[in-house]
Image (cartoon, rainbow, N blue to C red):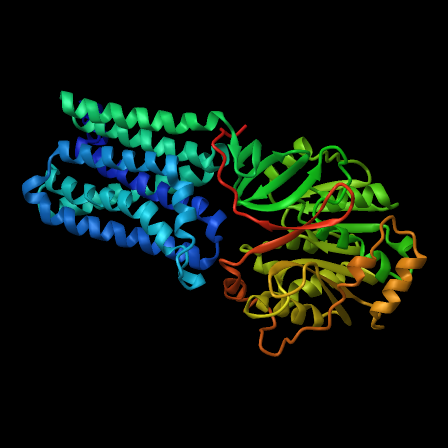
Length: 535
């Protein structure tokens, strides 16, 4: 008898089930919002603050409206309709979410709040609807007393939110694409509507059938597997970002959170598709003797363009540190990366690896920065000191910084230059495009205190056979930027998000090399999310 009572105590009533599922769905959608918004607006602290604020505001308004109506209108059937409407809206996100994101990105707003319209339009309505569930459930609760009913309802909603947070973070995002995760929440909403409101009349069955068909049709749009950037070869959600491998003609491109990160010519796998990767060879001109560079570390793997070229072109041993295991798998499967005695891959964070390794290097290449997402722990004075301690006495640090060379959007570049200059005797900069546009700026820091001029580098380029003509790259030699108005980045104060903020909404320009070896300028575009299931 006691065991039967225990089972009855654990069994959730229909209102309790509704509250629990609403918590799962609202928190799951909040985490999903970060993944959907990031490719267009970045994933800075401002984006996440906007998402959290909009979800709290929408839930609060839903609680308020639902509480005013609960005494007269609260029924299981009305809660079921809330879940059906939520599912219908989620289906719309699957179908036209990308179009809505692109449409809202053009609003003339300050960069810090640029994502606000998109978050409100895409996620405000379903979150508002889910806010109705808790006050309705409290009204329908079998608990005695308003306080006990309210406490029980909000406990269940919070437990549901915890389940939604952990399930989305640790299971759904690593396993499914964005559209498939949205489909899961839409399907859960439909099933909950059926579970809490039976039997179903003809009218409700029609609505339910329409929502279910809409969700299926939305998922089926993935069959084509194309984006405006090309054919999607592979797509997945990693613990860190959205990853896509896209083929367009003979070029295969790795997209991370919608931004082009690496590219490979399928016909000539060792050709530099993005011209900024040619600058990776500049340290061969800064070294007193390029033959003495035999130990190289790349922090950040991506498509492994640099590491593959170094192993192919030079007698070196290359270590690559990449924090995202899915990036390593994609590079191995789709970009021809083969681990060997001369190319060793480590799945770890860059700072963690440098702190724990006993190795010293002749060259460290930092290729872990992005336009909208920069690990601040890889930018500070303390990190630069750690990197310097892992370099030989004449070692070189090379940093691929994405920023503008001048103007308001140059703040991150200038702060990074100042920070590196505080640790290394000499620092050089090479903007790859020029002007005030957001671009790749290659920053070279040396432990050699003698400053090399542009003419000296050009002369070395003429004399040395480093496997690539770097005259055009040396021509981008830039004067030291102004740094008195930007902070020195420290572990206890590294306002990286604020420094990146002026770049929001600006074009990120990448130069590409065509097959003949000449350069063409291209603008990085946020990728339309592929509608193919993750492999």
